[in-house]
Amino acid sequence: MFDFFKKKRERVVLLVDGPNILRKAFNVDLFRIKKEVQKYGEIAAARAYLDQFASEKLIEAIVNQGFDTEITTGDVDVTMAIDAMEYVLDPKIDTIALMTRDTDYRPVLVKAKKYGKRTIIVATDVGFSAALKNTADRVIIVKENGAIETIVNSE
Image (tube, rainbow, N blue to C red):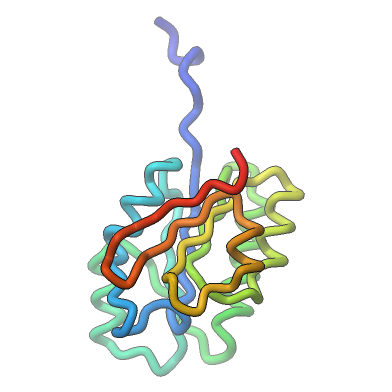
């Protein structure tokens, strides 16, 4: 059997809006989220975006769960959106997964789809933007009880 008959493994980037989603009240397990997103392809990059007020303990915990960290002195949303757009334009990336509840990322999803990328939003069920939820191809929702629900908007 020849390898070229096998379907290519999708390449996914997972970008996390730290201040928006990594709160004690949400009790998000990044390792578990990463495993869930890996169902849709090989993780080419996993990065959490944090502001300058992030504690060393939080940064260490994120790194220990297999994520790179990006510390910003300005708006986390701007830095994460710019990086997301770089991945949208990267021909080696097939899927953009954003972990956020913030509707500000909707234009990134729209542009990603325009460029032929699949889109995933990972969010908590608390304060989740309906516009964001309806724009992504797949939605992974982390419930308050820790359960994970996946919604498919398009294949």
